[in-house]
Image (tube, rainbow, N blue to C red; front, top):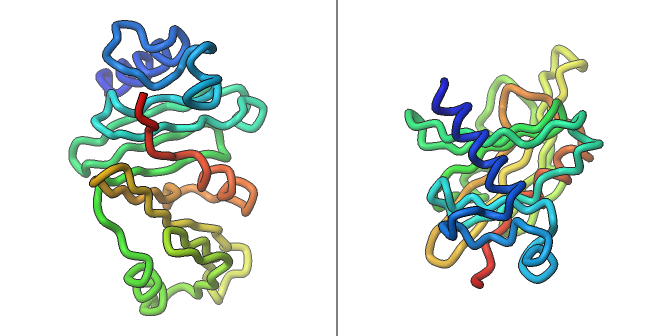
Length: 177
């Protein structure tokens, strides 16, 4: 737990002081942000991923910075900021058709596709017996060179459609310098 906190703090320090020791080149300071990435971009290279997190506006997260935690046991990068932003990044090829088939086979919940593209699936998941248990979910494929990642919302959290729209645009491949 302590190492996870230290990693999150290190990420925040790197984001606030422009990357520090030359190890990252993610455009986190104001000068390079205008050329390479938005000012709120956080390089995920410290976690071995050629990706950039476009952090949500602090007004939407209750003033909280994103907490980025690598989960060794599952090989998942978890990003949380407030109650309306939480996603998982997993390095795997992903398959939208397979995800849809999994949703169709779910005997417990009813799933309705809200948006579908070749790299994105946004869907409503609800329990038929309890109309108060409605969840908006997403499953996104992100390609960075020859590496493939799946980005999803954190399953135990509840999000609305605006939250999901923000999270869908939050992870992008890191642009070469």
